[in-house]
Image 1 (cartoon, rainbow, N blue to C red):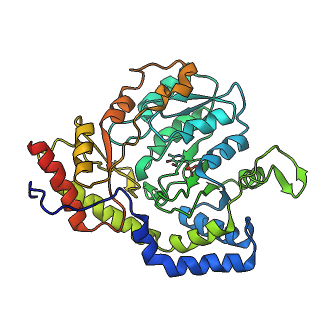
Image 2 (tube, protein in one colour):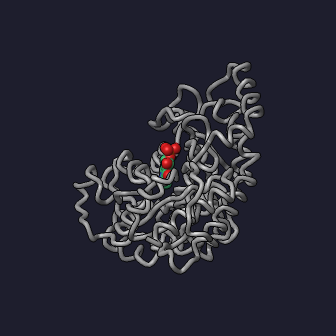
Image 3 (tube, rainbow, N blue to C red):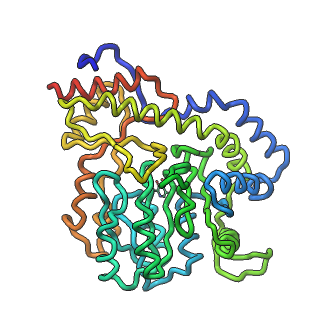
Amino acid sequence: MSATVTAARRVPLLDLTAQHRAIREEALAAITRVVDSQKFILGDEVLQLEREISAYVQTPYAAGCASGSDALFLALLALEIKPGDEVLTTPYTFFATAGAIVRAGARPVFVDVDERTFNMDVAQIADTLDRHPNVRAIIPVHLFGACADMDGILEIARARAIPVIEDAAQSIGSEYKERRAGSLGDIACFSFFPSKNLGCYGDGGMLTTCNAAWHEKLAALRVHGARKKYYHEWVGVNSRLDALQAAVLRVKLRHLDAWTAARQRNAALYRLLLADKLVPVVAPEPAPHTTRHVYNQFVIQTPDRDALQARLKANGVGTEVYYPVPLHLQACFADLGYRPGDFPVSERLARESLALPVYPELAAEDIEYVCATIQAFFAG
Ligand SMILES: Cc1ncc(COP(=O)(O)O)c(C=O)c1O
């Protein structure tokens, strides 16, 4: 790798217009089909998508909803999580994971993450549960496209009869020991936010499960808790998936495996180019249990993060910090009583992690340019 950064380039963190160019005709035809049908809410288009997602995720059931955030909330409602209950998750995740717990009236309890996988540290779960006997659900997050260590989590959860909700918002198609994210726990939640590997043209989400009764309840909870129209068994919410979004997602799902392969190729090239001993960054290396990493993000770690991010920005490279404030230190969670130092790995990752562009349409030259810029930064 050359240390000189020559021609100026622009490499955004994500360029959805590149993807759109490739599928424009298919997507517009799907949108036209829905507009012509004038059927916009749930209906056949959503049903077909649910079938296709359940086949993809390898679960018998899937239910569309309005967002990944709502999917988490609906899962907690289905499990009858209520005020006074606690729910275990990690502080190193997108806000929605813990926000949903509070929306359900419960209290988040955090356990730190593993510094290599960014995911729940299994070694700390049992102790935390001993100190929190009111934990009624566990939400491991499959962060950045890699799976949490589900065998370890499920073993502890099963021994205590605590259900497990997978937050798979960032990890559609990811595999744990060759089984798909979303088929591993009791209920799983996906997001179709545009920046996700499978993103729609607005907000959208999906719940998957292997349990027929939970599926029926989830499908009712998203329409105000009615299995039969106007007969309400539960108090649910309005969280329906639009037919327009489902139609776009059905088009994109056909391309998802090719896009994932491109993300994996990009990640491999980064790893190769960043292996230089003089570049003090830690590149993500999938844990052996993640047999398919789908790289929704490619997140490096370096103590010089802020200065490196500024240098990359000055050279036209988009990056992002996921996430600058771990959830236990968020102002809105001050009443939970956590303090700086409680979760040292999450706190360090908040200071040192940096997401580099990894979207499928990146050219090898873009990645070489990003890596040359990083090398030039450390060369001084
Ligand atoms: C880990 C995680 N959980 C939940 C969500 C919420 O999904 P949505 O934005 O669709 O509400 C996201 C999306 O950003 C996420 O990354």
